Length: 133
Image (cartoon, rainbow, N blue to C red):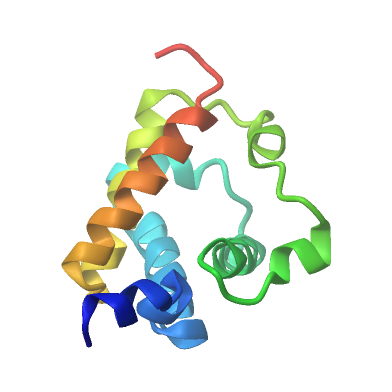
């Protein structure tokens, strides 16, 4: 595939469509549940994690250029407003980013795509902070 073809493909297609994205989201939440270093962000989520898994999957689908499943169900994501009830400081931001980076490595997202996604995730995660620290 040449550069022009790669630029025409959506992130959703590059991640592997519905199957690849679901695999990534499931691995992200599996790690959150299994690894002690993610206990801080795990505590912010309900048990079981099924609704959280679906919401992130639906959101990322549209965000990556695939079907807008989150917007169809809930309207505009209003990410910061929806996360205001949860205390998010630098530690929580960093846990989320480490968990997502680990998940992308585990499901073998192509390294250049991992880097691009982590840049976007980092900007968004930093903007989500609502507590000092």
